[in-house]
Length: 164
Image (cartoon, rainbow, N blue to C red):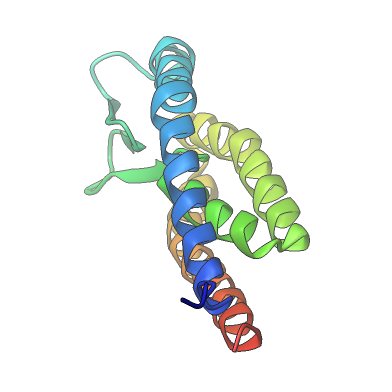
């Protein structure tokens, strides 16, 4: 009986699966509780302390913070960095070994971790252009997530075709 190895092209799918599982476990066990604790214990109370009493509405769920200052008809929200929009592309980039994309993704989310709370503080203090930037960031955040997914999928397809 011939001992046949699994075709090399299936190896990338196995790597992606393992990377997604490992990053998911890491996120759920370690990073998510830390992220939620920092946001509920530090960021949201700080935003509430800067808001005017009985006028600004600040709500928080596990993925975003919504701010509705007085005089505005709708709320502005921002997605908290290092959530699902980070870990899915990150795990794919690990599997396809795209170091440049990993570095860019990490730096982008670190940048957002600093800039978004500052914009939120400014928006609470009635700086209108900060609200526009928060809204624009929300759209750009989703666009960059999709671009990152396409770059990761491109790496998977390239690795798949090289395996044939």
